[in-house]
Image (cartoon, helix red, strand yellow):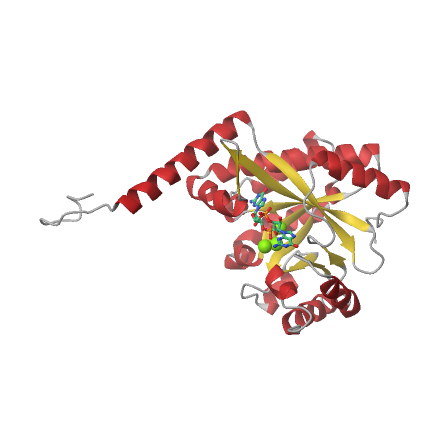
Length: 283
Ligand code: C2E
Ligand code: MG
Ligand code: MG
Ligand code: MG
C-alpha cells in the first residue's frame, strides 16, 4: 500500500488505527466462528394493539455474545454486511424465526413474527427463493412471516427490489418498512410498493407528545394508503396514550416489553391465547 501510494511518502499507521483494525479483525473472526457453530440467538419483542392491548406479534432480534460479551447488532450487522456473512446469518435468522413461529402457532395459535432484512440480503438475487424455501421447509403459513426492511434500503433501489417483494407479498408474506420517516420516501413509490406496514422510527416516538408532527404525518399517510402503523421504541405512558389517541395501530417498546427469550415469549403467547388476548391475524 505504501508503494502504491507512490513516491517517497511514508504511510504512517497510528497505534489507534492499528488497534481499531485489530479489533475489527477479532470481531470478524468471532463472527465467522459464531456462524460456523450457529451460536447466535433470537430474542422476541412483543407488539400489541394500541387500542385494547392485545398481542399482535413479535419482532425477532438477533443476539450474539463474543467471548461471553454481548455485542449489539448495530455494531456487528454492518460488519457482517461488509464481509458478506450477512447472507448466511440472515438465512439462519429466517430459518430460526420461521421454525419458531410455526411451532408456536401449532402449539398455541397463530402469531406473526417479523424478521429484519438487511440491504445485502435483499439485493441477493436468490432472496425470494430463499424465503420460499424456508417457508416450505417448516411448512410455515406465509402470513406468519413479516419482513422488516428499512426505509433507506427499500427506497434506494425500488425498481430493483420490486419483483422479489411483490412475489413474496403475493404469497402472503407481510412487508413492513422499518425506521419509517428517517429516509426520503417518494410518496409515488410508496403507493406502488407492495407494503403492509409502516414502522414509525423510534426517534419520532421519542419526540412525543411535545413534537408530534412527524408521527401525526406518518399515521395520516398510512391511513390514507390503508397501511398498518407500528410505533417503535415506546417507552412512556404519555407516548402510549398519544399514539392510541392519534390512531396508531400497534405499539412496540420497552414500556410494553423488552425483547424476550424464546421461552419467555412462548409463555406469553400461551397466556395470551388462554385469555383470548391475541389479535386475530386477519384483523
Ligand atoms: P430495528 O429493527 O429498528 O430494531 C429495533 C431496536 O430497538 C432493537 O435493538 C430493539 O431492542 C430496540 N428497542 C426496542 N424497544 C425499544 C425502546 O423502547 N427503547 C429503546 N431505546 N430501544 C428499543 P437491537 O436488537 O439492538 O437491534 C438494532 C438493530 O439491528 C435493529 O433495528 C435492526 O436494524 C438490526 N438487527 C437486529 N436483529 C437483526 C437481524 O436478525 N437481522 C438484521 N439484518 N438486522 C438485525
Ligand atoms: Mg426492525
Ligand atoms: Mg426499527
Ligand atoms: Mg430502528
